[in-house]
Amino acid sequence: MSDVPLRIDGKDVTVPEGTTVLEAARRAGVEIPTLCHHPRLAPYGGCRVCVVETEFRGGWRLIAACVYPVESGMVVRTRSEKIDRIRRSVLELLLAHAPDSAKLQELARLYGAKRDRFAPDASYCIHCGLCVRYCAEVKGKFAVGFVDRGIRKEIAFVPGIAARECRDCKECFELCPTSYLQAAFVLAESLAFPPPPAGAKP
Amino acid sequence: MDIAEFDRVIDQHGAEPSALIQILLEIQRRHHWLPPAALDRVAERLGVPMTRVRHIATFYKAFSLVPKGRHEVHVCLGTACHVRGAERVLDAVRDAAGILPGETDADLRFSLETVNCLGCCALGPVMVIDGKTHGKLSPAAAADALKSYE
Image (cartoon, rainbow over all chains, first blue to last red; front, side):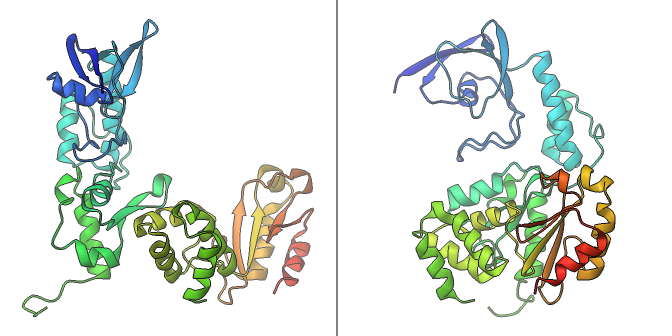
């Protein structure tokens, strides 16, 4: 695999072919915010907070840094008025769903996003897919997945699998940017596979 | 409805993960819904995770996870049908079948849905039952049409 030179925010960096712009930026010491990215999972491109610009035919083109592979000689900038405006809007849309998420609020402060710009539609899940993908790609258990589509899309545990696998794992809990996952698990647990009463012998 | 029948459908399609949607469609066509036992069997035989089977079964409107009636009734409420009295046709169908749009009657005879256009506006008001188009309907004719379906 050959090495690819590129420039990110004025810093020259050389990375192996196939590296994403996000990884290249982190290697160059340039911070790009992310929500749905996880180093152990395949790139997903779900949240669009990692949007950056790349020079293209004399102008600037928007790309999602976490899924875009580096190209030789590409010039990337990770902050501009336009990028900040887009990240702000993305965050405001996500905040309508999960207004109390600490991770979202931290980014919102950074980009001046207002939490009540859009009418709240508190579904609490922002569809980052971290839990679904972690369970599938790292654990290979497929205990939680997406159901339905569009505005009704949500995560759901498969009771039969969750009852067997989840109590001793719960590794996805800390990945969730909104804590909706924990709520979904407690709900599924109490409805479909209630834990034995305290003090009972298994 | 038993495991052996699901297995026959699965075998007809080669028990490949890529045949998932075709297999679910065939089971849906035969039973008018996807029983939980069918989802379990399909996931197991194809080696596809249950999360993926459920994702697909809930994604497409062609699939139902609750029992549907033997006959699917679609009443068009598109603009052309609307101005020609589709609301009154729908009222007549609702009364005749005893169900609201989105519902299925207790005998599993009809499932009623409204649609926004069936592409044959010149025939409006239009209703489609099991793929057969009934056009230029009066409310009484719509209620009559239901009688020929058992």
